[in-house]
Image (cartoon, rainbow, N blue to C red):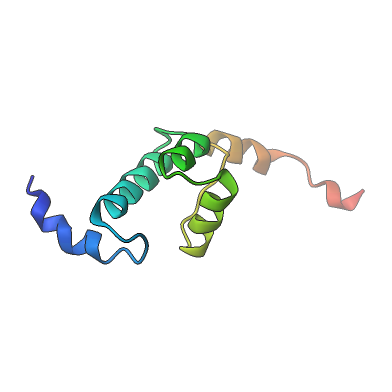
Length: 84
């Protein structure tokens, strides 16, 4: 795979000053979305607090949930407590 083909995409990342930090951010977000790293580890790699990293993800409209797909399905099957 040619990495050079990705350089224009990496350069478009609106955050961080240097290309290495931009690349690191893209890899960390990908790993987080694939659940290869935890939020704590992702924020640590980016030298940010968990809250700050979550706020950054939110500002960029990057969906992240602590819940797994299975957790979401379990919660959907719970009875609606709002009627009580």
